Length: 123
Image 1 (cartoon, rainbow, N blue to C red):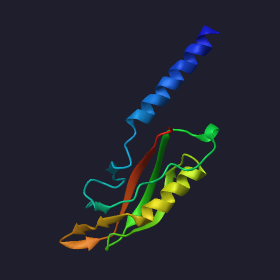
Image 2 (cartoon, rainbow, N blue to C red):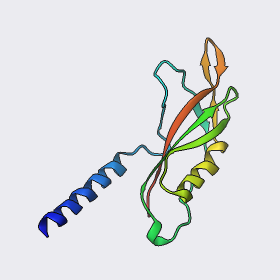
Image 3 (cartoon, rainbow, N blue to C red):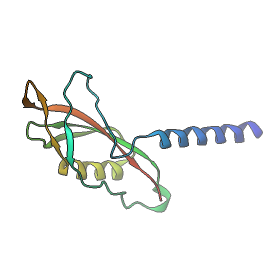
């Protein structure tokens, strides 16, 4: 029994470490190569924690990838790493409202694929 309990504690600590290490919704990272120009976030709306039953409240993150077009609009949002439908829907509802200063190549705006990690904290 001690081994099973120790395994559960270890698993819980590992999950907690992953959640705490996850970037917040304000932190962004690119899924593209370092040579690709990066857009700059100029306007965002908060991604709300979804209304879910108490037993479904979890902490974690949703990773989404999308196109930032030449005008800085977010398009074609895809969920890369899901936390569940309610959380995905919250991300899918908020990201199209975000605006970016478009990436530039040779002084001209260009469309680029971009990735964000949105962290949810159960409260």
